[in-house]
Image 1: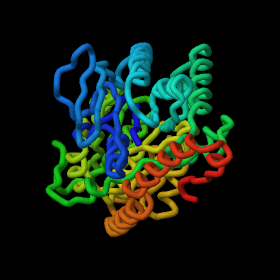
Image 2: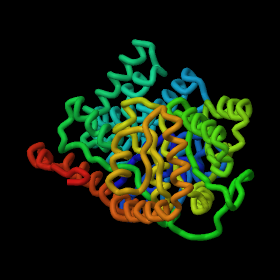
Image 3: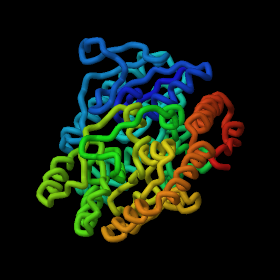
Amino acid sequence: MKVLYFHQHFSTRAGSTGTRSYEMAKRLIASGHEVTMVCGSYGGADSGLDTPFANGKRRGKVDGIDIVEFGMGYSNKDRFLKRAVTFLKFAARSIALVFTEKYDLIFATSTPLTAGIPGVVGRWLRGKPFVFEVRDLWPELPREMGVIKNPVVLILMDWLEWICYRSARRLVGLSPGIVAGIARRGVPASHIAMIPNGCDLDVFSARGESWHPNGISATDFMAVFTGTHGIANGLEAVLDAALELKRRGRTDIKIVLIGDGGLKSELIARAQREGLTNVIFHAPVAKTRLAALLQGADLGLQILANVPAFYYGTSPNKFFDYIAAGLPVVVNYPGWLADIIGDNQCGITVPPDDSASFADALEHAEVHRAELAAMGLRATALAKNEFDRDLLSGKFVNWLEQALLAAQQPPDVGGAETKRFGK
């Protein structure tokens, strides 16, 4: 099977962003399939290609993956209009490949939602089976967050979401809320697989020399957040907790924020203004270096803004990196990850927008080190038993194989499929 795979924000492990598509592509290749990965140039990502761009494009093989990279830079610091234009340009250039590449199946993963456009074109104009992976529900999330208010834009996104879902022969959702959101659009449950983000145990369970950022001593208690510093991440809640810890005189509890984003400069300014020396900001780091940092950490922070759509509608990479590293996790919102933490006793849940409870949780963890160590062991067990990338990628490869098989069979045969993650 030849898969034409569209992911605008693709990265290998050399980058400082998520590597799901890289890991899944490698598993497809290991199973005997071929993959052409189409991507853009994303801030923090590393496609593995280093040749110059020619006419805005470069191509080469990285770890067996045939990569086509368009030289259209994107950053999560960009304004909405600039981002929208970049998304549409990527979709337009991707459509050309739909008509020129040789492939059996199209796979596209959001975000952005526009990544599904080449899949829609390939399905209806070339008759190719299309599988669409949904990482976030759009336009539901931006509508609830209030970041997109223009009714025309929301209507267009709503229409694009519907046509992507209905054009795809099979879909993948990364969380229970995403799967439910797809089903609400009229997609049969038998055509949706839930395959969440996973744990790269070969990276995060390997033990080597750990490191601490500047400003962290060997005796400090270190809680780490890794990821985007944007509106959705709600990192003001972390600074609120840090301010509460400062008032209590707990200068030995340090919070490290690793990453970048549109609000990072504002967060740094606030921390400086309020004298929050217990908050350390650090630039993004590659995955292998991040793994070495997490080895020396005490807690992982799973933080999001208090938006109900996030509760069951996200599958953050950082959570799975934390548990793969054997870190207990603090989560500051209810939902499926909070349920997982509670069921497996591998972390601490705190109410949203409650800085006192957040600070209490960090203090409790620092005092009860033996309890924290037991949580870490349970986090490791959870990572191995339920979220091992090898386990999930096997389901992913099988799902794509079934989608191609279904496209080649009469409708009554294809309709008999009922595969779904966890069942």
